[in-house]
Length: 307
Image (cartoon, rainbow, N blue to C red; front, side, top):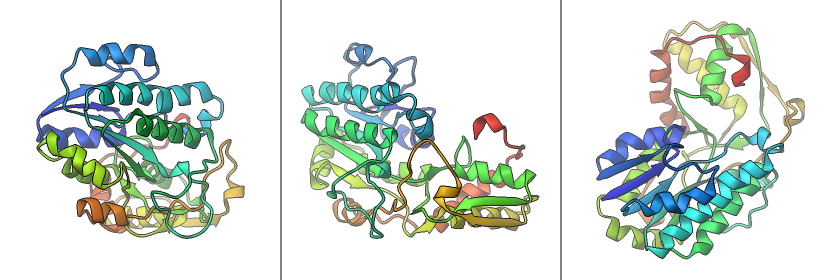
C-alpha cells in the first residue's frame, strides 16, 4: 500500500509517520513536494505519484494570524484540499482529511455531533469548513476527521507553552470558560493508523460506514485552566523544577485575541465507536506519556516570538 502523507512537520503528521510506515510504503510530502500554498502545482505533482491512500494532515493553523491572512488560510485549508480531493476522486483514491472543532460556534453545553450544522466564528474555522465541503463535494471516497485541542511534548502548543511559562513565572492566568478535550497528536495518530489498516481496498467501505465524517478526540472534558493545572501538577510529580505557584482563572474576555474562540469545543465520539470500534482514552490518561516525554527534555524559557 502506497500512502501519501502531507503536513509531515506538524504535530499530527509527525506522530503519524512511524505508525504509517508499518502499513506500507510511506511517501512524505513536505512543502518541497506538495506546497498547499501553491494549489496550481498540486495536481501536476500528484500525477507523478502512484498512490493508494492520501492523508492530508497539513493545514494553516495560526488562528489569530488568519484574521489578517484570510487569503492564505483559505488557500491552504480549502483551495488546496479541493484540488487534492478532486484528483483523488477521479482515481478513486481514498482521502483522509483532518479538520477541527472550530467549524462550530461553540454554543450550548452538549458535545457536537458530526451532523450538527457548522457555524464558524473565525477565519480559521471558516477556511477549515470550506475544506470539509470541498472534500465532500469532490465525490470520492473520503473521511473528514475533526479533532480538537491538539498538543504534544514537542512543538509550539498549549502543553509546551505552559511548561515553559511555568519555569519563569510564579503566577499563570488561564482561561476557564472554554471547554473541550485536550487530545495528544499520538492519540490521534494511533486510531487513524488503525482506520487505514493494511489493505487500501477496504478503506472506502470503512469511510462509507462513518458517512465520510467522524470526530476523534480524547474522552472527557476540561477547560484550559484545568488542563494547565494538570500539566503543572504532572511535571511537578516528575521532579521538573517549576517556579509557578498559582494558576488564576480568567474569562475569555480577559484574554483578548483577534479571533473569536468557541467556548464549547466538546465533540461527540459515538460514531467513532460505532463505525470503527474505537474507544479513545480519557484526556488525563493520554496526557501522561506526553508529560513523561516532556520531563526528559531540557525546558528553556519561552521565546516570546513563539507565543
